[in-house]
Length: 133
Image (cartoon, rainbow, N blue to C red; front, side, top):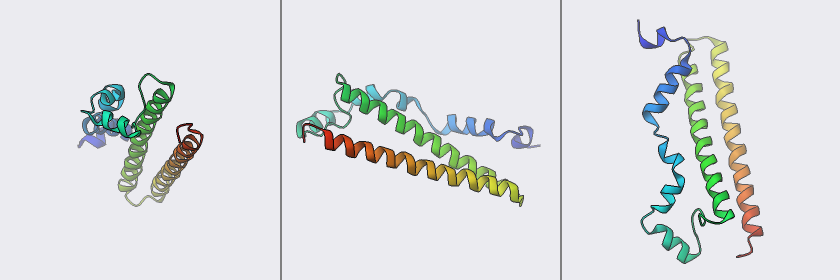
């Protein structure tokens, strides 16, 4: 009797894999990462291209929130793709499971395209309305 046959719900297995292979602590420490870039933030500020903005400004805070949200959304999309692939690989010829897996993968990719398009529109509007440019 193997590990997966004991656990009927693959969500338990995927949760364990997620926490083993993906250390999410750097995602939640984005302010610490920005303050510890080793001089890169000074160089970016000197050229006028500060990566995530100044920590003390509204614009910098919003850009950090957007970066954090996109990081978490990326992890969620990766997890959904792995889950869809897992369902497809364990379908064993069951057409309903294959269709379910295809739908998960297709909907995940559509969601990713929507999020990337929304981010691109946000960056475009932000750069157009930026008074510094």
